[in-house]
Each structure stands twice: as C-alpha cells, then as structure tokens.
Image (cartoon, rainbow, N blue to C red; front, side, top):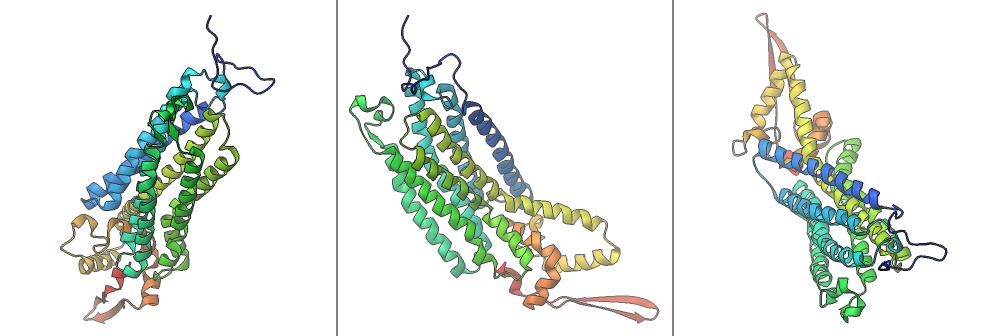
Length: 379
C-alpha cells in the first residue's frame, strides 16, 4: 500500500488525518462564497433593472459595476474550488498531490483580484464624479486618485501573471527551477494599496458633500451612502495584519483562505455600495408615488404645478422627478430633498415660493409663484 505524504509535516504530537481532516475554514469558505454570489448578484441585477426600465440608459458606473461583478463571480468560484482541493484544512491533513491543483487555482485568484478590485473602485469613484461633476474643481482630485490607481494596477497585473518564469513554476514549485518573486511582498503591497484607496473612498465624500445646501443630518446621510464603500478598509487592514503575522507560514491551505476571504468582503461590500444610490432613488420614487395617491386636491395641484415647471423635454419622462440629474445624482438628492426642500430653499435663496388665498366673488383663488434658478444644477 502506497504511503500518502501530506503537503507539510504535522506539528510535533499531531498526526495527519486524510480521511477525517479538521474542518477549520472549509465550510466557512463555501458558505461565504455561495452567500456572497447570491447577495451581490441580487443587488447588481436590481440596479441594472431599475436603470433600464426607469431611466432607459446605462452610464459608465453601470458598466464598471457589471464588469467588476463578472470578475467577482470568477473570483468567488475559484475560491470555492479551493475547498475541494484542501482549502480550509490544515496542510498536514491534505495529501501532497492536491497541492498542485490548489496552487493552480490560487494563481487564477491572484490574477482575478487585480481587475476586480480596480473595477469596483472605478464604479464607486465614477458615482462620486457624476454626483459632483458640475464642480470641476471638486472632481479633479477624484481623477487624480483614479490615475494613481491605474498606475499601480497595470504593472501589478503583469507582475502577478509573470510571477514565475516560466509561469508553471508557480504550481510546480522550486523543484522546477523557475525563478519566482516573493509572494508575501506582492500580497502585502496589494493590501497596503487597497487599505489606502478604501480609506480615501471613505473620507472623500466629507468635503464634497458638506457644501450641499441641505441639513446636516441629511448631509450625513448622503456621506453615508457615498462613503459606505470605504467600510472595506477594515478588511484591507485585516488582510495586511494576516500577511504580517502569518505570511511566512507553510500552512498555506489555511492562511491563503483567510487572505482571499478578505477579498470577498472588500469587493462584495464595494459592489453593494455601488448599487445603493440607484436603489435608494427607486425606493424614494415609489414612496413618493404612493404618498401622492393620498394627497389632498390642493396638495396634488401644487405638486403638479411644480412638476410641470420642472419638466425638461430633452430628458425621458421616466426620469422626470429630477430632470436635470443623473440617476445616481437623483438617488442621493431625492433621499434628502423631499424632506428638506423648504430648508434648502431658505438656506440657498434659490427659489421663493408663496401662496396667496383671496376671496373674490365668493370664490377661493390660489396663486402659486415659483422662481426656478440654476441652483438645483449644483447637486
């Protein structure tokens, strides 16, 4: 009977168990992958359906979100496959022949991570650019950030593709005579860049949103929607800690699973947050439509008058709630404007609305005076 050799020798006092290995992260990994695939797909599909049926167009952030979702699906599928080749078990409980397949899949994951992470950040920053696009000075810094990310991720993808020369040396190991880079240093660099860029996405909406003419509580709400993607910073920090503390460990079937799970959280949260503005817009639109049904005739007349004045013929009727705003702009502003129209008007002096009730020949006449300026364009 042939002797089965583990990937690494077991620690002193521990014996390899190939038949019943200890499930450290295998089940956690599989559940995480299937759950994130389902949840993220629902959010992305909802965003695209709303954009198609309500706005009848797709913008660059929609394409970026779709592309990043495709890479995310590939990433999650590959990470799930690791669990069928020893991923989540201790390396001393995994037979040596499984290492080759494990490393092949790991190679694909390291490559997929680069375009996935970059496209998620593009989707989030594209939304910020579209929201504040009328003020070119404000978005200039966002373009600089995108350029800096591009300058990093382009060489990063080539370094990961040609990590070993020849490439097969990645899974064949040192015995093949291949020349390879230090994987720990490369993954650490990824973690640092992700941590910094996620932190920037977290704090970027603060100075941009604070100039909006809305209440502070509503500003915080907009900042929360725009900056939610920066929550992934915590997982970038976690990945960096793992690399520093466990990067040199030979128990690769455990350590690598921990590392790639942080990528799941980082990209998954980013994709969900990229969908929030449009979903929020649709929710507010439906809530507003429902409330209009129960309005009094006078309220309906006033709202109708405002909509007629605000309508712009060059935009599709489906987006008539905010004719001069993109879907993502409307998604953020409509969440705050409905409740703060009066305060915003008073603060900015953008419009002056008054109603006069007079008695004339026994009848009641209502006059609505609305002055519409370009102040709304600032949003």
